[in-house]
Image: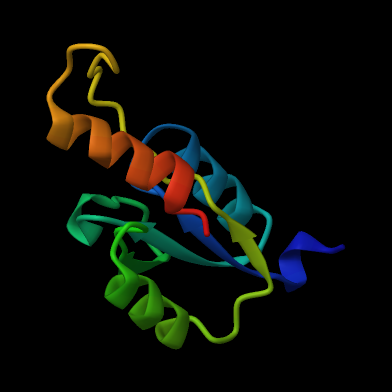
Length: 105
């Protein structure tokens, strides 16, 4: 596979590993869609920013429609609330599970 011939979609591309993956793909010549809950938080010139919360089926469908030419998907989206499964806030626990377990369906 030649990265320079790929069209990549990186979820969670606004920071951390996702940002670095998007930068590296772009530096190797790939066209890159950069998905994030807040696309304005993606500060990589030249990528195509896409609003995407992987726990929202409507946003997933809209992202798929916007990026029909994708040949490589890196599903890196995540969340880190720090909520304890035993005594944590239930909304935060749901966010963690919806993102990390169910969001990749």
